[in-house]
Length: 422
Image (tube, rainbow, N blue to C red; front, side, top):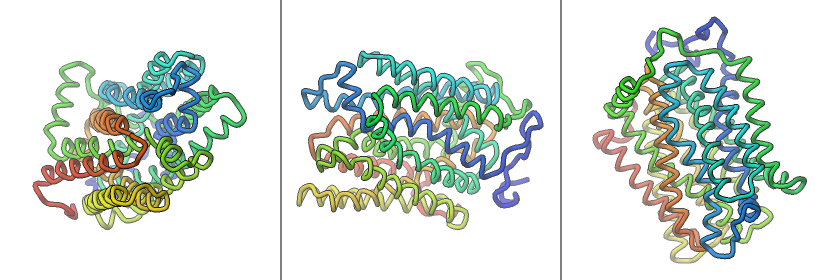
């Protein structure tokens, strides 16, 4: 049955490959959100402890360069999370979704334990990279399962609900990290990651069916994988929105990497950093919920293109205001929050637009998309973060540059036409 004729909100399949029923839509939303939250938790719970972890593992923090290098605890994980998806994709399309997911969750928990045991900064970065590799498998399977079950605007609506719930983690993770530091050594931050990974392993093992039928699986060989990735590259829409996402999400990672320095260093919010961060995350969650309510009526392109234009205008206005009048938390916070909320109407819609043409190779398409939105984005974010100079101006100029770059890619992809109802 074509996507447009499917009953509203119903999955494309109701049973997994071995006859096990697909959980209810509510349970699937929460499950997928939890799987994607592995990544957010591994990043955001670290933020209040970056300085302490860096110091305990041999980074002195005596110079501005050392202070910026503590961001590598975040970026090492993100870099590990990116490129391996190119390998997880073909594996998922060959062996199904459950096996790669279980391997990813077990590896995520074990590397969290390893991180807690290390006392060398460079060894910690290597372990964080490896943790990102395993997390990437879980994230890829989560998106592939959604594409197995939904398509088009319903996929965008489903993913917006996922992102609304998922955003609870960035809202509370820094506070969780702060609480852990109050009652236990920093090693227990990694303990929380290990316990969360194991809990998800148990839940998915007993509740998530195999959503990729045997007759839909692709052979695992170099020629087949290369051919599938060529198919991704040949799809104008997929490749275009993949590149646009890779650029625009560099802005998101640049803020995450430098957020502690911004709120504590620029604005002096030593004790309340977690609350300011939670406020920004709450606005992003609200934008995702808004998107989930309106995307099926308004359309993915109209919402995401509009959000991108607002993103550029707001970040430009904030950069200009800071350059002319200096730093002010009470100007920065509301203007930045509105700017950051635009990700809520770009993320799910860009993902659904990119995935829609390639449902038959959803694992490979998800891998390519995940690579663009993590590896490329993290490299761009790391470059912007390295220019932190005690002010927010480099961050906001980076937002403007990446917003304009993403808009140019979308204009090329859509042949100059924005806000289409398609």
